[in-house]
Picture 1 (cartoon, rainbow, N blue to C red):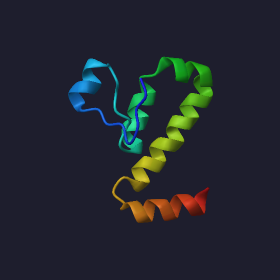
Picture 2: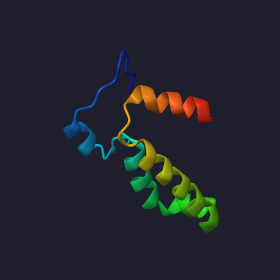
Picture 3: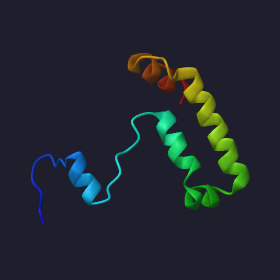
Length: 78
């Protein structure tokens, strides 16, 4: 099947096709990663724990910021 233009699936279509939506923020992404044994095992326990700790601290610091402030901070940091 060839799809032209911007593909869009309704929530019902995604459910039928078993397609999950991407996380909408870092907090949701962290929660999903904590449940993903394949990725956590690929990183090994020490690296995955360190990665999650850093991202959790980042999320706690920025979760109430507006997008412009978040982008500015991340561009300066990385």
